[in-house]
Length: 308
Image (cartoon, rainbow, N blue to C red; front, top):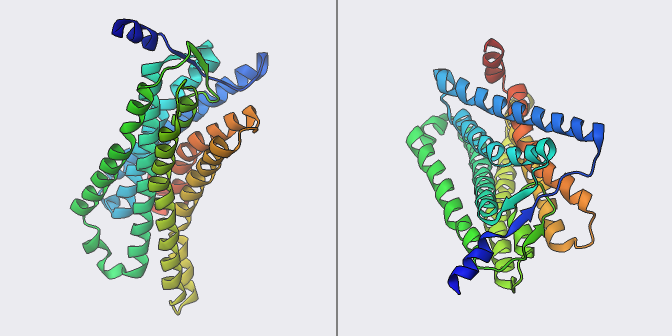
């Protein structure tokens, strides 16, 4: 009986969904995703290379930026090849095990990115609130421990997700709403009661992105309070200017991600096309735009990129 169940489990196939298009539109969408893939990989790799090879950039802000670039690279490698497979080779099928592995890495990396954005908010607060002790507070060993804690937190919270989904029964073919696997999507395909899984999924969102976004908001409240106490108007603007790139990264990450989570949980009658587009935006926009935003806003980084 166990062998029969294993055979049924292994034969489960998920069908990924792409944008409805034909002919020329299909070709242009394929080229667009190839372009995004190249830009995201090259952009984040260049940032990592420059920060690693330039001793003057071995500062807390750029170390955190390197962590963000590594996370974005991981998301690119995990998801975009699957998306390109749909548009270039019409390869829509993905096995249960491959789907569970993909959703694990997607949610793990997104959780780590959320933590890194929180650490970067803390970095900006220390730099503005206590600039004289900035280097002594955020030492390289302390930053390494903070990064390790971010990874361990993500592992503890996200690791149960694929095991919770593995125990369910699924029909032979399951059509997903996106071009990659997400926990909420795969969970809805199960032929079982998913109440516990739904509660745990909501718990993970609140404990990671919900808590992190709240702490980032509180950090900026404290930053504003500190900045408004500065007498010089020019110094006030200079301090706020150092936060612009981080604020852009926060908005690029949280706005579409929260919108997609709301649609998955409450938008049962929402358009499939809207879900696909929002899924692409939430996943691809941060890893594409983060290198561009930081390269434009950071003078030191921009000068070194031009040299490269």
